[in-house]
Length: 354
Image 1 (cartoon, helix red, strand yellow):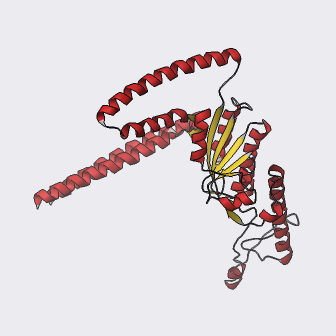
Image 2: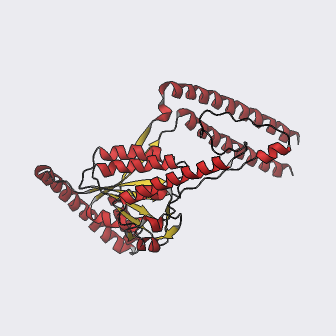
Image 3: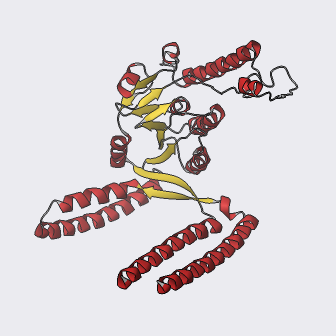
């Protein structure tokens, strides 16, 4: 038992020293990042989906053959790649001479939360696309969002409007949900494609908040709310709400709802906004009936079609992790491994002693 005690004490000292060293390095890295501003920068990650789909198709094909057939087919594929490479080079030269380029499709992703925080990546991706895209190209947005804050999704929709203003075709694919603010973004598109059971719509506005005024009164706690301006604060969490304040709050909700309806009407004139702007949601097939979408199709199906006729690029803006964050992750991993090794050795030693 004395051995276990000494071993455990040594391990704790070792871990303490290691954590202290990493903490000092992390603080120095944080100070460096703060001075250079490196933590806020990111980079574009671009994947050519044509090659990815080709590799997938070839892998599946080869897996279905026996060993002898695989060798023959692998040789044939290698020859085909060489021929394709030559053909692509000739086509590139011809297009450069004729000033004709193969159509390009840019694929973006938006996975929305309540605050639409993904807009920080979307704005960078759209700026990058606008630097190269022409009216003959296309942008495909894979959109998933149940909505959230009005101003946040308003900004996200405005980013997509940048493509519309430049007359670059935009297709939005909804595999799961584009509701409320998510649909506000979707309706900017020239075409909306949805999976048969995707959820769309919810063209409405909601606001809710608790009120603790009676609890405060019961416990004889005063709450003071001082404002300048008749409607600076209509409803409060701790103050006593009035009928006039409640009426003004509802009026503001109605005004926001009207702006939402106008936005949808302007971008999708075929939609009967009176019918759909009730706050209800529709599944894909029903959404097609009321013109909330243009076709029933998953994003995978559509992208496979695009790969056959265009160069398809998936673009993601990735934020760089600061040096401090990288050291933090490395430190956490190292400590976990150290603790695991210590526990394993302690367990082995215990078994030997027993």
